[in-house]
Image 1 (cartoon, rainbow, N blue to C red):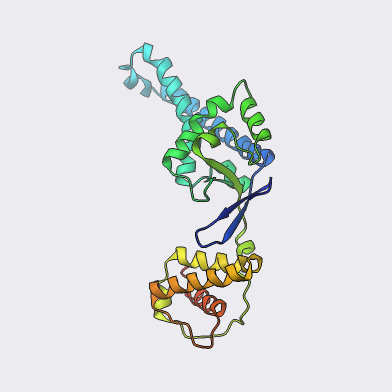
Image 2 (tube, rainbow, N blue to C red):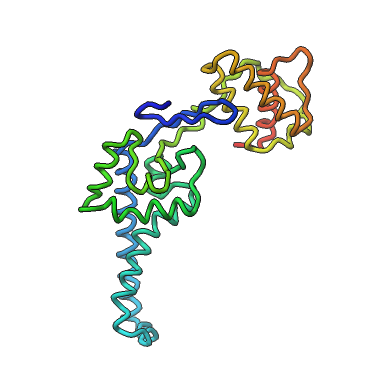
Length: 255
């Protein structure tokens, strides 16, 4: 289940992750910034070609047939227009410079980061979303979509969400922060396990009591199997998970 402005994902551990969807306004803010940067690239390329021609370096490119110039120009425009978005979304895990400034990110509808094929696929469909001009098809598609998805998003199975500040995902601790010796086993905890623990700690108040106990037990069992850490006889599951998360955080391995 999900609202019009949020994407809710249920993990295998029965923990609900709620991600705020990016609307048309924030998406076009990011697009406007990226378009401006693309024009800067076009102008820089023209200036570079002009400088090469004036300096006489252009004569070394005289071996290129004149009939190839239109094709090379189209290829250059294609690389900047479509390659710009795909390149940055691959390298920056779903973000372009414009999206980063607008604090939005492309992810797969399952909640995982997009891969290379999804980044390329959704951006190749910009030619459809851009029809008949100024992203007419894309705007209409986003307006009628409950998740503000354009054609490229439907084909690639992606959505655009707002980046949530780290402080909003800070776990709500029940136990007091006390100086305690760090167990070497805690240092073996993979980063994805820490994310799982802190997601549970952040969402536990919204879970049904039975689901909360079952989830905490499943996570604690995984931690014990991975690291060998054992819960004290008088220690609750939540206190055990908080203690493990605190020890890992105190090592400054995760920021």
